[in-house]
Length: 279
Image (cartoon, rainbow, N blue to C red):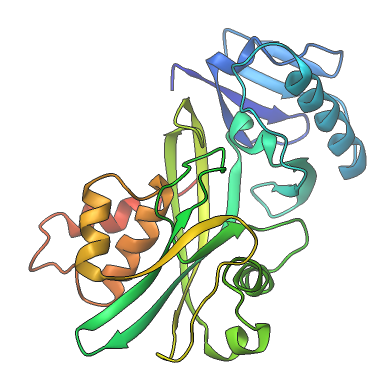
């Protein structure tokens, strides 16, 4: 952890995230931030309620975003995401731009949609649009996206299914299956620079009838393919799949018996790494 600073908020005893040292020089230094290089603490010292803390952090992120320094992520998300304490208190909201900058936990929903064919399971796998800033042209989960402030996992999943692959919300709600959560940690940001990602995925799957044809919806997707399990595995091995989506597919293969203790000697380690405790 020598390359990271703890992101703290005054009044809370546990860190909210881990800020890579390359970001520290770009964090503006107004009166409501305290920086301790010896302890590697970056502390928001002002703000007694959600509204004030949200405003102060937004000012900080906008100043960093508008600075000529290019060490931070390069796009403003225009989406608000919640930050929770270890006890579940809603502490503030922040633009998605700050999630990886501050190394906070990002809550998202991910769907694997599949079809049973004569050859076995085939998975609907999208290729990300080449205009995407992060991982352009790479393969993705069937549907995925971050949860907005106040949004429940199932509502977020239904919304994403309608936006990304044009599935009717009523169909999604009647066919989708919740499969728990995944939690993991990466030491890179969303464009593979040194950073910190804390991910919690609410995982879903859905068997589609052969007469149900997902369609490209909101421009996030460039192509949509129906691939065999073997084709997906080969794509993962070849580095064609977005980094965090590999975790979702691994969990799917474990649930469906493609990865077992008999054919994967490291299955205990794999399962452990798919369910990290975020301290």
